[in-house]
Length: 594
Image (tube, rainbow, N blue to C red; front, side, top):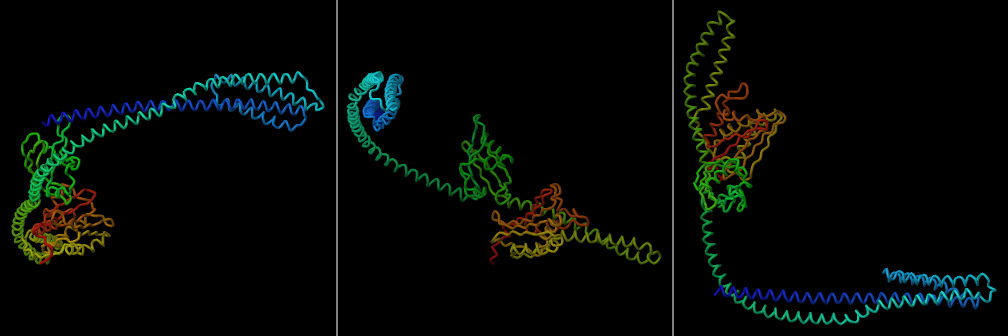
């Protein structure tokens, strides 16, 4: 039944289209015929008007010559010069009328005829002018020579003959346009009537068919509305399921996103398009507009880090992959554990933030290393301290006995004593840097910790003509810390930064901000920078780039920060400066309200 209805509607639509275009073509033919008829009629009217005006001008030339002739005769008979005024005026008018006639009849066939008329007019004017000049020259002359009068009359007769011939030709040509005008004036109204009748008939037929089609459309619309109601219910049910699925995805602690493979003409994967992202994935990316966009275009670093190749290989091989990778997001570097599984012609990626886990692993590894180093350091220090004390006592006893016999030996004893003191200070520093500290934790404002550090290095900055810039976010978390030890650690970092900068141009920048739910403190200098190979050595005991330094300051600093669970990272570029980045653990943060 639906196939029959579809066929009937198609045939009905085809017939309506044929009827419509057939009517349009017929109406266009009638319209063109009417238009062509009106153009012929209009052209005929213009031609008749043109020939009428030309005949009028030609007749005016004859009238002007007749007026000239009458004026000259009056002057010859009365010897009254007032008769010459109409003569002169008619002479100018005749020339003007001939010029107008030339413009109205510019065709080549008329050029010779109007030229003959003009020659005849000039001949009459010349004969009349001769009579006038003769009379003016001899006013006493009563009778003009018969020869001149005869020539004037002959010229006028010749002009009339030419005038009659030209007038007859013009009327003959005008006659054919008059016939067209008389025959075509009725065709246009007839065409308009036919056009109107056809338009009314076609409109009535189309209206009838349109009414019939609208009736069928109304019935189809009612059926469609019923179908749409059923479809809306189905869509609502699917939307509810989709919303529930999205809520499930959004409450997941892991980031989830799906991507579709984009292939070229050779079926090679050239990019991946984001299809869906849950809230965690959107927050991790720091953007809400990734859906529908392309991975390599929005994150070209994915290609450089090899993640795109991994994703593409999962699409091709259909083998899941699990790995870990760092991601530089809007709040700094974050580590993720990544699980990539094939999904239709694409992938589904689930990832979780393991930054804190990595931080704890690093701290655990560092703790083991520091603990081992501390044990070795304390063992060595204790083993060295006792013999060193005996040497020191023996040196004092020996010095008292030898100095009495030879005073020249005293400087050598002073050298030995100073180096023994230096060794003692080193041992003391080693024990201090490696000893286990009992932290006196209290809730501290980050602003206060920063101000304590700035106060400690203020004189050093002033002495070297450097400046310090501090940038603190509003409503920073409070931190649980041993204020005295944290001050020592931060001051050591600031002092090292100051020593790395040039006097007069150095800028120490301190920035505290909340990032990724945690707290980050950055201490930046614009000094000489640190080579990549030397960054790890900074925290080794007895390593110092300054002459005379013991190299225990940053070792002590790292020990203090490690005790607080603070992860310390160093970023540096030679010639541009260094940044010490301290990431406080979330467990040490609070809003400051007890």
